[in-house]
Amino acid sequence: METNILLENGTNELEVLEFTVKGRSYGINVAKVREIIGYQPVTPVPNAHPFVEGIFMPRDMVITAVNLSKVLGMPEEDKPTDMMIITNFNKLNVAFHVESVVGIHRVSWADIITPDATINTSDAGLSTGIIKKDGKLIIILDFEKIITDISPETGLKVSEIEKLGARVRSDSPILMAEDSPLLRKLMEDSLHKAGYTKVIAADNGQEAWDMLEMYKKQGNVKDKVHCIITDIEMPLMDGHRLTKLVKSDDILKDIPLIIFSSLINDEMRVKGKALGADAQLTKPEIGNLVQTIDELIDK
Image (cartoon, rainbow, N blue to C red):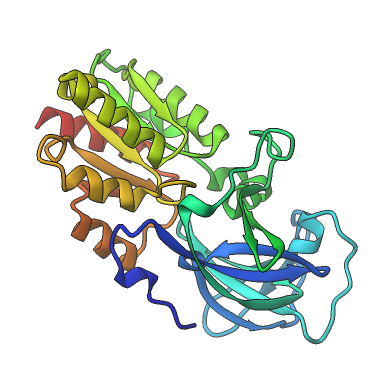
């Protein structure tokens, strides 16, 4: 699959793979996609979640196949022309059974429409954004939530906070940019349990940047923010663009910045390092996040 997005730094752009399920258009960030193959028969797994079709072995790796028709509440009807989108995020390899693959669209995060509460509640919504392209709407699905619903232990490992034991309260303020309402609440609660009582939550990178700009104008940004945590995938402004802006600013560049995302892999790690991120962690590892915050703030 040809894509150049990983070669670019802080452009606030992404590439979205458009695919269809029962004739309706959906999308996934290309950064999550390993490869696309024709549909392959799977071996059912006893007592598996209803969304899981089974497992298959395209090469030397066993991969779980998820039926997106079931996830989206649509009737199942396998066709010889169906496709498998093999993904990698949260350190997991999962294949999603779809109807067809349309192509790749290069878009700006600023042009992605954020779903409102009527279609995307914090505990049930499956859309992270909507793209209007050639007169049609493409819904970007929340694949992390789909997998967490199937297997909750793959989500944010909040139990790791309890393993850290008793913690001293800290008044170091932390600015957090996370677009998922559910994850934002879980992260905020986890940081509070870990002793960080001053967490400033932003819905996306643009909102976080606006706060930093406001604090700069007030002349107290170093007092207001001791550490920044950012996701990568966010509407309006993504985490890589936020990182580039912060680390290119003479006043802000010394504030520790942690990229905390399900997309962290070797390629993304190189990109984050080039942008100046102080640390990069995979999203389920909330315990490691707290320890990294400790180290960076102590410095």
